[in-house]
Length: 332
DNA sequence: TTGTGTTTTATTGCCTCC
DNA sequence: GGAGGCAATAAAACACAA
Image 1 (cartoon, rainbow, N blue to C red):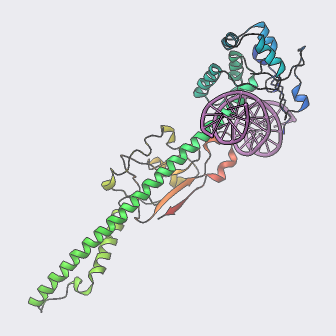
Image 2 (image 1 turned 135 degrees about the horizontal axis):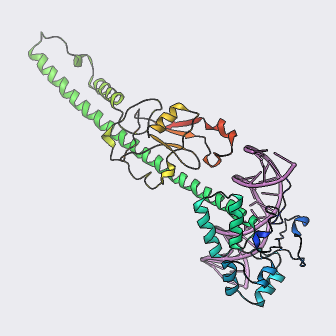
Image 3 (image 1 turned 180 degrees about the vertical axis):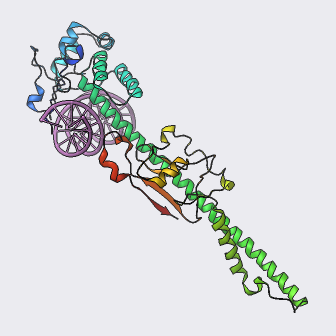
């Protein structure tokens, strides 16, 4: 590990965000040297609640947050508590968290200047700000993964339902065709008995079941009604356009892909607006348009493409390139 | 009150970038 | 080689049921 100082100044050495921070938290895991603090303190104090030095508390607040704190929890008791519980850590105050949340909404990465600024405004160590942002990013990522999972699950369920509907419809059509074929054969037979000299029709050389199979298969190969696209083929039908809605509507627009330059065919899919990529895990899914999955080719199978791209690392992880190759699986 | 599960704060080690 | 990011993890703080 790179030598990293955890004196809360190690990250900043900036002088504690302008509030005269001298203290540092001491935990069981802390290295002894890490626990001592920086210059200038007459207290061998380690640990604090909110990592605020006693000097701060005695001198009075330098920020609105400190004022609030002092007003709310004023008194010797607090002071004693600080003094006699040197190893306790304290959660940030609600208004501090709120402030940080707002800042996080604006930008979830923290530039050094902003870190210092926030530290000053909140009366915290820059290191604490950095840690808070890091933990906050981790929480955000976890939430996104959960969302991704829900989206995938719902997508899967919709596709499965569509597939089952199609199977039913196929069976229904098949029996209809069978029925009609029977009638046709019957008709031909009757006709044949009255006109024995006529030439043979195709239906005379095929059984009704064969005709039904033939008709159904032909129909399927031409129309491709629903479901998920076979990569590389083009077909869609408005026939099921109103069947599936809502899946992606609850996702925000950021769910709509970021392009992966590494794969042109998928780029095309994405550019045509047929696919989208989930934000955290990078799953590639068929995009629902006007309430329908626009892609399908082949009634009995579905393709779920995966896109091994970690968007969270876009900015700094070149090594991801090998993982950018899309892959997928079929289910039926 | 206490046991237990969850959340938050912080550290550690590894990795990448410059 | 330092800075900063992330994953994994520890541990304190907190919530809550029994």
